[in-house]
Length: 83
Image 1 (cartoon, rainbow, N blue to C red):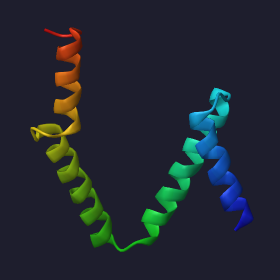
Image 2: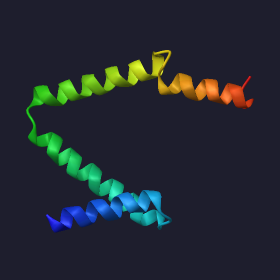
Image 3: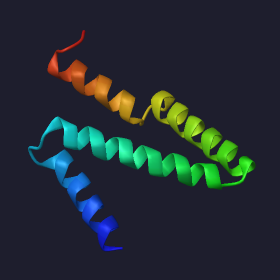
Image 4: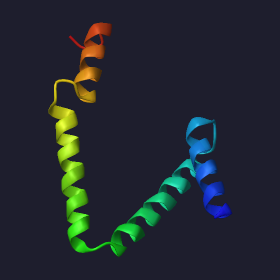
């Protein structure tokens, strides 16, 4: 339990504070491996459900008029970055 809290704290701090790139990459790889193991232990239908849900959420955020992609485009247009 203490190891997991320490790993989470160092991983989170490596993204928000100046740290070596190897530490950031290592924490991302470790989180990816733990996530892959966790997803492999789930039943097959739940993995497909998570995949479909994430694809639908991504499409909704990209296509909706109040989504983050629309906000970024309007903010860039307001700043004059794009015309």
